[in-house]
Image 1 (cartoon, rainbow, N blue to C red):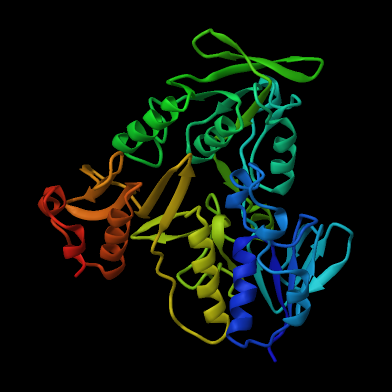
Image 2 (cartoon, rainbow, N blue to C red):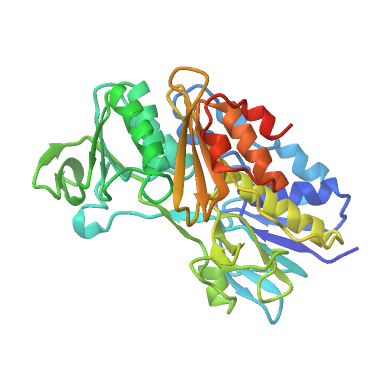
Length: 405
């Protein structure tokens, strides 16, 4: 029997690694170390159905507690790791105890960026959204009529805005860049999503930063914006990106570049240590990237599990992503890094459309807004490597299914 695998982290990637190893009948002992006091669970519904009260927490769990004992997976909750000693192959816990490992897997995820205390980021009523504790605190405050300021116009901020409007809050969203979704999507996608939110009553201000938050006895009461306006706010949600949890790796001398650098097999520069999910940096067509998505966390972890179980297949990312906002489903296939051209194609249903990305004439990604056919077509084209000409996509009479027949 192989020696112990210690998994640092208890999120999506950590659970996927353990579950896949057991599915592959790998018998090695597994110890999973999680910071939170609850069993591993799905994170995406936290800020949507869970916050809306449409889904209980039990339904978010990957498996009930009995599964871990039945599958010989030791899980330690509320157990943060202090350090890694690669020479002795041990991890040091904050209580001073050590756990030996033969193989170590880092699935440490990422942490939301916070506003600095100097501008009021430490005031009561200022939140980020990442884990169950965040969602529970938000649920107590997201009441009809409350005034919510969202800082950041990425997917986290926009999804929070949609939930808040459903709960009857007065929502203002500010984005310092010239448009929402500036880092992750084309202007056509941003324009469509902005229109949806404004129709739902969200006030969106682009090219608008935050100068400071104004408190009253330690509690948020207003915000001064970069254009000089002061707006009232009962609460603030900060959605300005995340930073990878790579401190343990860096302190242990592993290679780190805004994340833990891994090869195509998930290995770090120490062959006994692997990393996966939001904390891992991997090669994507000659560029080092972190793919922050549930899909990548699962796929990369399962690929690492196959390697640990004796396989030799490299992980080849096939990115896809989704975002639910109101009754709108945005589905994304591919990775639009470096795109130089886009094409917008109307969908069959009213209000549906897709935005197709090209780089050097090659199709690389698609954003589908309430357009499942465009998403499925784009994903299959990317998965199979089939080339498609821009003129084909541009033809509104073309049945997209014909491209993958």
